[in-house]
Amino acid sequence: MAKKISIVIVSYNVSKLLDECLQSVDKALQGIDGEVWVVDNKSSDDTLQMLADKHPAVHIIANKENVGFARANNQAIRQSDAEYVLLLNPDTVVYENTLRGVLDFMDKHPEAGGAGVRMLYPAGYRAPESRRSIPTPWVAMLKMLGFTRRYYMSHLSWDEPGQIEVISGAFCLLRRKALDAVGLLDEDYFMYGEDIDLSYRLLKGGWQNWFLPYDIIHYKGESTQKSSFRYVHTFYQAMLIFFRKHYGHLSIFFAIPVQLAIYFRASLALMQMMLDRLHRFINPNKYKRKKS
Image 1 (spheres, rainbow, N blue to C red):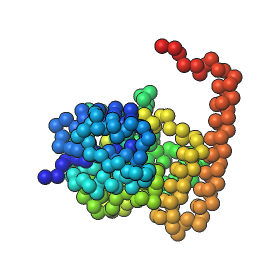
Image 2: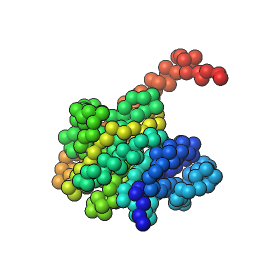
Image 3: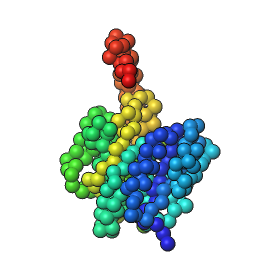
Image 4: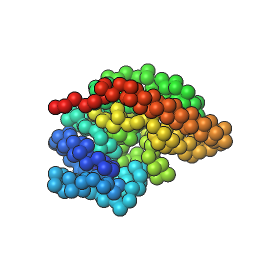
């Protein structure tokens, strides 16, 4: 008999965070017929040993190379047959009532193809990427210019369920019937963008995407260097893939602006890093770690 939920976590050199994540998942799964899959993208740390020692019930797929986020998730999804699939980042902590609350909502709303939750940074404030719009050329252009209210659907309440367009890949609960209908993650996206693409295909397929006011902590959401050249380049390249796939007739008008945006944002990131280093040089005592 199929499980109620299969939780899929893709890991890469985050052994300690993954351990904490799995401990929270164990508690959140109490009383729920579920299973956990970890797909490891050839970590060089002790991830596999940690899993064997501390989480022997977890299904493990140990890749011999880093195949990317989309492909790794698909590997586990294909081997599971649960009614629901949860794509979960390893740098998250799931609150004890979150899985039960989200599953209950999905059971009562058969038109819902997927759902995301309220993501909190470790400091306690809410992550705006918990609710996002499809980056149409217009919305994407506004975001690149720094006008993010439309992109982050800021008009929605944080405390009530609401329909959204994009479900974050950090916590993305998917109905198996919806996945069967629209297909798995597009493996053309190595990292970033695959959640946008899948969310868009769910909407086009007649399904609804929902934001639900249940909580997780997303550690890397706060510490990810979103101003770094690597992040900026990878994110906007993913956006360009999305444009070409879904707005191919307009791609000729947006390819050059997106490329220019990459280098513009990267230049800002470089200047910010230089300013940060200068500030650290001028005020070294401010950044010294306190001795315990």
